[in-house]
Image (tube, rainbow, N blue to C red; front, side, top):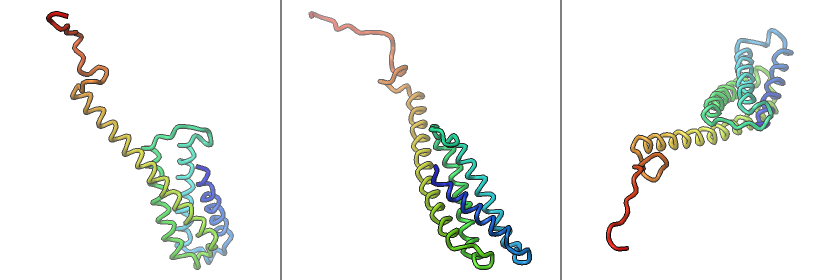
Length: 154
C-alpha cells in the first residue's frame, strides 16, 4: 500500500503550487482542483487505516473495495480536472504524470479488492445455501446418529 504515498506527495506538491500562485490567478476552477486533492488525501488516509498504518494487517476485501472505489472516482475527477485546467492553474507535467500512474495503481487495487469481495460473497452465499439444505457430508448436516449394521451371515 506504500504505492499510494506518491499520490499524497503529488497532492501536497500541487497544493503548494496552488497556494503559492498569485491570488488573481486562483480562480474557482483552481480551487476546485484543490478540493479534489484534499478529498484524495482524506481517502488515502482511509486506505492507510485499512492496512493498519504500515503494520501487517489482514485487509477486508469488502472494505477495501469500497475505499478504492472512492479513490478511483476521485482519480477520475482529478484527471478530468487536470487535463482541462493544467495550464490555467499551472500544474506541472510531473504532477499530472504521477497522478495518472497512481490512478492506474488504484484501479488495479480496486479490481483486485472487488474481485476478492465478490468471491467472498459467493462463498458465503453457497455456505448459507448448504447449511439451509442440510447438505450431507458436512459436519452437522445429514448425520442421524444411527448406525445400520448389515443383516445376515457375516
